[in-house]
Amino acid sequence: MSYKDFSLGSGQEAGPSSNKTNKEGKEGIPGDARKMSAPWDSLRPVEPQADKPKPPSRLGRFFRRALRWITGLFVVFALGVGTTWFVRVQPMNTKMGDLKNQLQAAEITVTELEARIADFTPLVSENASLKTQLLETQLHVDVMRILVDVTAAELALANGDAVTAKASLTGTDTRLAILQEKLQGEDQQTIEGMRTRLALALEELETNTFAAISDLDVLISNLVALERSLFEN
View 1 (cartoon, helix red, strand yellow):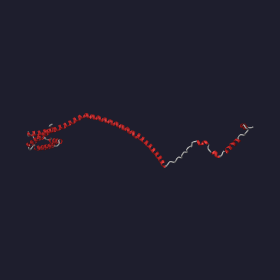
View 2: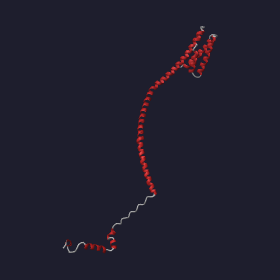
View 3: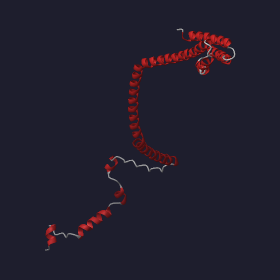
View 4: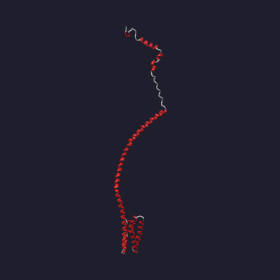
């Protein structure tokens, strides 16, 4: 008896008989029965079949491309804005701050200068008043010099000294011309008449002493009237 006889226990041969039985069992099941599902298969949930994805339309592809372009442009714009901020805007802000500080300092300086000007204003007004007084005094001196010249000439003619009289009137016409430039309106016409009267007196010094003294006397009267009208106050 072999090892196979002991393993089977009943004296049946192993191997060929079992294989034959399996083959006969499979061959004994009808084809429809093998294809038929088990009774519990009907209780299993039916899985839905996934729809096949539809190809994108032209409009969809256009919007996708447009969205990509817009996104790219936005990124480029954002980078440009950032670069502009760091390259131009930030330095300009710094410069603007410096300018504001300089402006504030200038305003403080202007305020200080205005305060100083306010302190000096009375002095400036007083200085202007002094200048006006000085001009009036100089004008008064010019009138008095002319009056002295004419008076001295008349006195010399009264003593019969025509040479001294002529020497006294040497610069009188020039002084009258300067005085005429300093005056205005009717006063200038008055000075013009005095110059005409002086010219007549100079022509009459050696030929007609009496007429020369008369002209000089009229000239003195006119100078005194002018001096009173200008400097009476």
